[in-house]
Each structure stands twice: as C-alpha cells, then as structure tokens.
Image 1 (tube, rainbow, N blue to C red):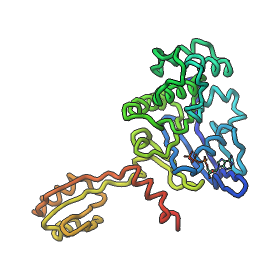
Image 2: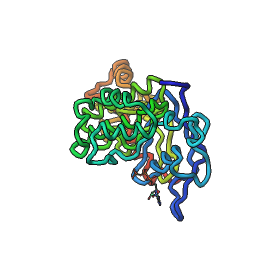
Image 3: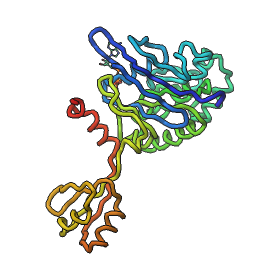
Image 4: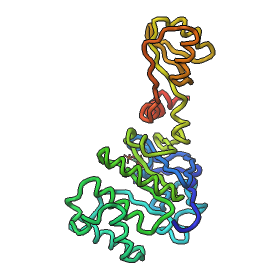
Length: 299
Ligand SMILES: Nc1ncnc2c1ncn2[C@@H]1O[C@H](COP(=O)(O)OP(=O)(O)OP(=O)(O)O)[C@@H](O)[C@H]1O
C-alpha cells in the first residue's frame, strides 16, 4: 500500500429525495487496519451513504470525508479509494481480462496490473472467458479486482458477500483481513448478517437512515451469557448473588456476565448440582434484530 492510512468520517450527513429521508443526521468513523461492516435492512440508506462518500450523490447537509477531504477533493481519488457498487454490472460479452483492461485504461493503470490482479483474485484460469458464464463467486472476485486496480488505501464494497457459498465467504474473510492488515480502510455493506459476523471487526448499524449502533463487534455483542439446567435452581440463584440471573423456565436459568467455567466453579463451591451448562454467544443477527426492531426505535 502506498501512502498514509486514511480514515473515513461521516458527520451529520443527511440526504433527502423529495419526501424520502434516505439518510438522517448520520455520524460515524471508519478506521484503517480493520474490516468494518455497514449493516442495515433493505432501504436503510447504506448505498446512498456509500455513494455520498464517493461523490456520486451530493448530501443535502453534513459531510462525508476520506482522510479529511471529500472524495472529489482527494489528489488522486481513484488511487485513494476503490469502490464498486454493482457486482453484476459486467458487459456480458467481455472477458474478465477485457473488463479489467477497460477500467485500467480509464484509471491510467498499466496492463501488468491487470495480470497481477487476475492472479491475486484467483481468476487467471478464467481470464479469457466471457463474464456472462461466471459464477457469483467469480463475479464477486472480478468486482474486487476492479476495485483494487489503483492499489487504493480505502475499499468500499456494497454487498461483497451477496450470493457467496460458505467457501466463498471464508475466502473473502481471509482476503479482506489481509487488505486490512496492510493498513487499508475496508468498509463493506450487507443486509445478510450471519455472513458479516464472520467477516467484520467493527460494525456501523443503521436503520431508516439513522445510526443505531457503532463500535467493535465484540463490544456490541455484549458480555457472555450461560444457560444452566439444575435441579437446585433456587440454591444456584443464591450462589450467584450479585449477578444478573433470569429464570427461563423452572430448573433453567440464564446467567449474564459470567462464562461457563465461572458458573461451574461457583456451583461446585456451593455444592449445587448442575445437569447442563451451555455458553450462549449473542450473534450479530440477534443483535441486529434487536437493534432494528420497532421496540428499539421508541425512546
Ligand atoms: N435516487 C433515488 N430517488 C429516490 N429515492 C431513493 C433514491 N435512492 C434511494 N432512495 C430511497 O432512499 C432509501 C435508502 O435507500 P438505499 O438504497 O440507500 O438503502 P440500502 O440500505 O442500500 O438498501 P439495500 O440493502 O436494499 O440496497 C430507500 O427508501 C430508497 O427507496
């Protein structure tokens, strides 16, 4: 990667389309060196925000900057920022190599960069095939190759995991992680949450154009919880004095803020019988459903 890392800053950003408030007073930061997921249900305003970041849509108010400047005022925008919004937008008659050559010519990149990226994205074997026969995974890799032509320090990808099989998602995770480790700023949007859970370090969650939550995924997921089945549930509640304990049903408890070994240790110390102990991790999906439910919308 060439040059200093670039931080993305979105500040009090709004976009109206007539009566539709697509993005409302949105503020968040995306740091270099991590993979950040931009999450929200369909129509939440993700694409509109990413288009404002790349100068394709002008904000109604607020700012969206990359390394402190709006996209259009960056010295070499296409070298600083790689962005692709539609993975299916290939000319069906073009081969993968043709497609990359067209974009390389537009950006002023040498042909050697095309060959390099075909290798890097595992497309060398399919380089001279027409894209209309490409699988979803190959299309997504070609999209990534297009975004990477200028060796950008910032990568903005709209729904890069869309339609990938588990093997494809695993590959994408490793690839994005490498880019982040090189100091790049990686922002990927999605509404398919179980895939994102494997892909991202930080998350920015929006709903109806507004920020719902932002931060490291591990913090947003909250502390662990443990499900315990015990014939001595009342005594276990006493032993767990000072911790938040819910009774799920008679004989079954959910203990918050402790991991399974800690609960087992306390039970042993108080000679309470335990028949089952299951660690529960809040998945991003649960978190997302919770954050985006109507209940969460009302103050
Ligand atoms: N050019 C436009 N004209 C009018 N309304 C628009 C336009 N672009 C987006 N919208 C509206 O703005 C809102 C946000 O749309 P946007 O595409 O940004 O959401 P999204 O989170 O990317 O959704 P998806 O996951 O479905 O792509 C939606 O209500 C959409 O209908």
